[in-house]
Image (tube, rainbow, N blue to C red):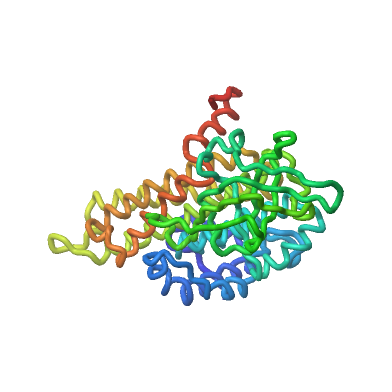
Length: 396
């Protein structure tokens, strides 16, 4: 069983996958169609997470794909991207859940943990027996968090029995209400360096509260996290995290994932709009035959194709070790901007029905707003690229 390219993959980028890789994509697509799609809207509307789907995701064996040695060799970044695109194509919320766990949390441990820590946590996370979250953003810190990190860590004691006392608050922490472990980034009061800590959900001193009233990615359980005298043993400090540059290694990788997720989101909206235009009649004929509707559809398809091409090329550069911050930043900025245009055009094609969730487009239209903002705003990613191409920093 292999998967054909999705209808929105007009240039058939998926043809570059191997037969084995297409089989993985097909397996994921089948699970999404049978298990996720039928319940996605209900859970989105209720802002509830479908915990019963986690064993099914685990059975796909896709959480280990990016990581060497967890389930054999690491998969090509291209396959990892196509899997993300497939999940977002069905439900951006579930792709965010998976990306937080698989990308941000597991990625932090993989890139910044010691060999012992990787062995201690990653296999269980790959089996999705333990779910992860990533605690960086704060109530008063978003784009400036690199310099303005308010959460602090203070070392208590010495040697292997030492502990760290963490105080502060985190906000917008996806999976935060139910994750078994949260990677918390904090500023060491002794030297102002940024360090990472794995904090377990039942750790005394950490409390989580679900954020309510979101208009996007409603299924994702974002949490406000408060840490008050939260004690973490030295063995749970990520041994390879010494500065925000280490944190940024994780973000560099996951920003590429946002490009894939954004492409899947706009692809779904385009396909829904195309199907609607072929069925909806006005003035005695399908609106797909109207010039201005075709103009919208073709512009959507162009946005998708350009974004998918950029995502594929970034994946190739990541594999070759050639991807830099500015490459990931441009992909995130461009793909999410084109996604925003595309879902708006899809909503326009579907007309008034575009704001009714039953027609599908409205949910992708709403979810796009979250993807557009997280992992660095358009403006911040623009300045990252601008600094790279001009040699001049415009950051204040």
